[in-house]
Image 1 (cartoon, helix red, strand yellow):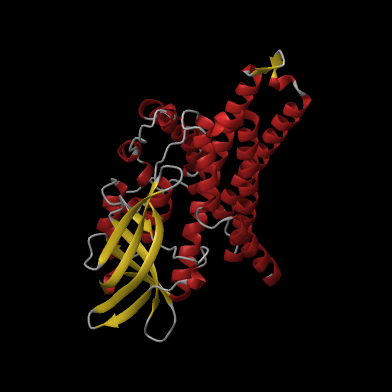
Image 2 (cartoon, helix red, strand yellow):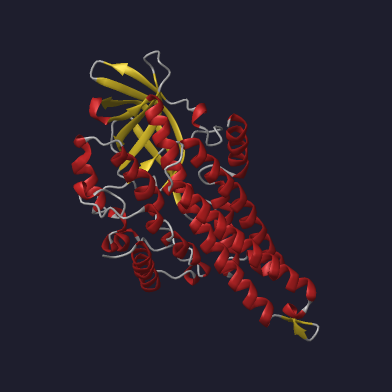
Length: 371
């Protein structure tokens, strides 16, 4: 029987080999677009990894899948594995409805790509400020509202949309919509780091009963868990980004000469490199903390508190490493022709994805005071 460690090692080895064959971070310096890696992830079985065997999945543990994102971060690969599998497909599977079994089987084969459209303008990532409304209709519900910056939304086939139920209960509902639903329009957006997202506009989008995945406290708890899973995966990607930035900067200070010697010989630069190494080690601990919190069977409050502590901290580590790398390189770091600038942009985007550091600090404090 294969151990958890062996499973993780096999997954990481397969992903590393795939990235080496089909992706090159250096291509970004030449202005080339990133390769679409989804079909290669499907060949490796990663979209099916966490889904249950009953719908064609492999039933692999989250703690084995999430660390593969570190490898994507190291080479600046955009995989959308977090959006479509770790968050989207998992969220639908967690609702345990037989009516979605066929959809999930298609998701395991990569034919269906499900994205969670939760963010709205000015909500700061807090579901309490959801303004999209679901109004009662004779055969179900109609959705009206807007969702912003759905990462991967330009290539998704389905959206999971949270909305306030308009039946007087004030409950939050979870609705599953195909991207070609009448009344749903999406506008593609290119983000700061070159990845893509979509803004959604919903105008009286019809939803029949089977498309309501959950409502009330169940819906809210599922969304929070799905987002925390995405945050833990993102933490591993950030670790990969920091690893690469630290290695590139270390090589640069060894070879860049000033005043007749490598700049790495100066004590100030040595201190900076030591600080970057410490930030990397702390970031690794944060990623492990977030992953362990998802795997643990503790209360939702304990999980959210641990994940927010990890993300709030790792955002600080990412910012310090990115800024230190730019300062060590000088102006060249922010040119398109040099890799560090691309890593810096991705680190800046990662800081703000799925709730920024301020959001997580506020959530941590609120949970600590409540408990």
